[in-house]
Every structure is written in C-alpha cells, then in structure tokens.
Image (cartoon, rainbow, N blue to C red; front, side):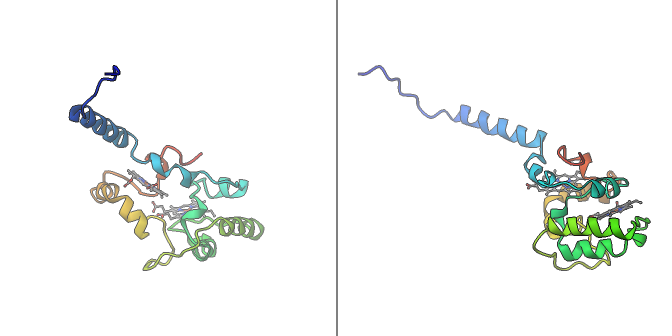
Length: 152
Ligand code: HEC
Ligand code: HEC
C-alpha cells in the first residue's frame, strides 16, 4: 500500500457545505446583481438631476425608446415635476440612450415606462412585491434599500 487513505464520500460534510452556501445566499440575496449598478461610464448631470428624488436608475434597465418617453414628460413625472432645461435634458437623454437596454419591454400598460413593472423585475422580486402589497415596503423603486451596490 502507498499510504494514501481512502476517504469515503461523507454525506454529512456535503450537507454542511450546502447548508453554508444556502446561508450565504440568504444573507446576501441581491449580491449577484452587482454588475447592474456599475456603469462603465458616468454622467454628472444624470447623477445629480436624476438622483435627487430617488437613486439614479441604471440606464441599462430601460430601452432607448423608454428613456425617450420618460425624458419627454419630465414635467409630469410620476406625480412630480422633474423638468430640466432643454440643453440638460438633451445631454441626459443622449447619455441614457447610449447606455440603454437593447430590448424593449412588452406589455407595458402604463403611460410612463417603469423598471419595476417589467417582467424580469417582477420575476426577481416576488417576495419584495408581496411585502410591498402588504404595505411593509413603501416603494419598490428604492433599489438601494435592498441592493448594496446601488446608489453610489
Ligand atoms: C422631483 C423629483 C424627481 C426627479 C428630479 C426625478 N424623479 Fe424619477 N421619479 C420620481 C417619483 C416620485 C417617482 C415614482 C416613485 C415610486 O413610484 O415609488 C419616480 C419614478 C421614476 C422611474 C420609474 C421607477 C420604477 O418604479 O420603475 C424612472 C425610470 C425615473 N423616475 C427616472 C428618472 C430620471 C431619468 C430622472 C432624471 C431626468 C428622474 N427620474 C428625476 C421623482 C423624481
Ligand atoms: C425589497 C428589496 C428589494 C428592492 C426594493 C429591490 N430589489 Fe432587486 N432584488 C432583490 C432580491 C432579494 C433579489 C434577488 C432575487 C433572486 O435572485 O431571485 C433581487 C434581484 C434583482 C436583480 C437580478 C439580479 C440577478 O443577477 O439575478 C436586479 C437586476 C435587480 N434586483 C434590480 C433592482 C432594481 C433596479 C431595483 C429598484 C428599481 C430593485 N432591484 C429593488 C430585492 C430588492
């Protein structure tokens, strides 16, 4: 014999590992989304103007056409007045569109497009939406309250 000890598969150790991984996943549920918040490019106007009432939502979460809709109605922006002067509006719109998603959401019924009503968002946020329906969360749009990488 060459001294190698044969170690049989140990189901308890395996279970411990799976349990540990599960704990990790639960402790940091939104960790895998980090790349959404990291924009490779930045725009100071977007960050300051579109981040004053809520976090500056990542441009990649809506299509260029959807950003156009949003930027065309800033005076009636989800019940708020988010107007910009024409030059600023144009700069922010161009920047948003340059970094926008390539696909447009289907089945949007609202006038203004939302990130939080898209199919992928609803699929990823079932439990959050349940909490929101029960009034435990004020708004789903406060991404940073759950996503550590968001908002700065
Ligand atoms: C004066 C305050 C204000 C400013 C400035 C503002 N917003 Fe908003 N925005 C709101 C409010 C209020 C909502 C609705 C939030 C909610 O439903 O909880 C909203 C919602 C949104 C949503 C939809 C979020 C969702 O539910 O998916 C998008 C997208 C958005 N804003 C983009 C922008 C962009 C782009 C700018 C900059 C040009 C901007 N906002 C500037 C107040 C503002
Ligand atoms: C109440 C907590 C909560 C809020 C608010 C919230 N999220 Fe999430 N989000 C989560 C959790 C938990 C997951 C992980 C779900 C999963 O992996 O199935 C997630 C997953 C995601 C994912 C997918 C990540 C991946 O890689 O699978 C994206 C993208 C995302 N969220 C973006 C947003 C954006 C944008 C907002 C704000 C408009 C937001 N979230 C608001 C809790 C939240």
